[in-house]
Amino acid sequence: MADSLFPRILVPTDFSACSEEAFRLATHLARQFQADLILLHVVDTKNLGVLNRLGLALPSEEKAQLKRLRHQARLLARRIIGSEALKGLHVKRYIAEGAPFAEIARFVRSEKVSLVVMGSYGGSYGGVDKIFFGSTAEKVVRTAGCPVLTVPLTARPVKAAGGTGTKRGAL
Image 1 (cartoon, rainbow, N blue to C red):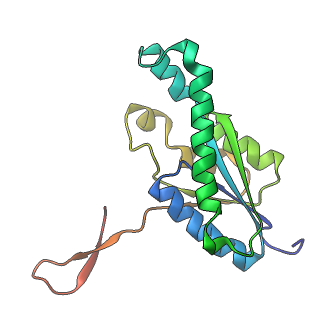
Image 2: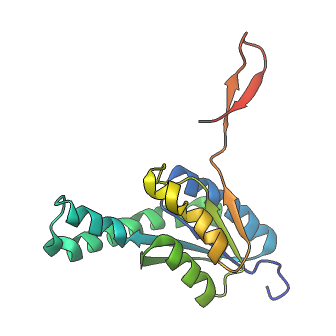
Image 3: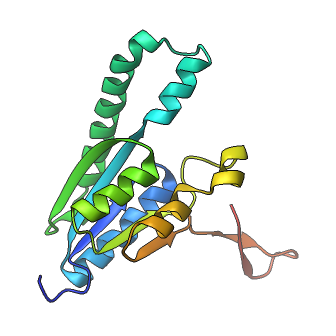
C-alpha cells in the first residue's frame, strides 16, 4: 500500500443521500487504489447549542442529547459498513464532535488522510449561514491540505418534452 496514490481515503458523512453517493464512489476508489477506507461522522454540536438557546431543548439535557446522537451515528455507520459491497476492503469508522469542517480538517491532518471524498450537497440545503459562510464541502476543500473530491447527487433522467429521448435534470 505504500506505493498507492491514495492509501487512506476519508469519507465524511452526514448520512444523507449525497453522502451515501460519495461513499459508493469512495468504495470503488478504495478498491482501485487498494486503500484503507475511513468513514467519519461529526456530531454538529453547534446545532445543539442553537436548539438550547431557542428553548427547543434543555441545556441540562445536552449530555443525553449528545449520547443519543452518537448512538444513532454508530447505528447508521454500522449499517453502511456492514454492506456486502465492502467485502475485502479495510474499513474503519469514527465519530467526532464539533464543527464538521473543522473536525474533518483536523482528522485529515492527524490521520494522514491522502484523499477526502464527500458529498457536495448534504443535509443542509442552504440558508443564511450557507450564503455567508459556505458549505461544509467548500470549507473542507479550503482547509483539508489534501485532495478533496466532491460528489453531487446524481441527476435522474427526465423525459424530454414531446416524450422522446431523455435529458439529465436536477433533482
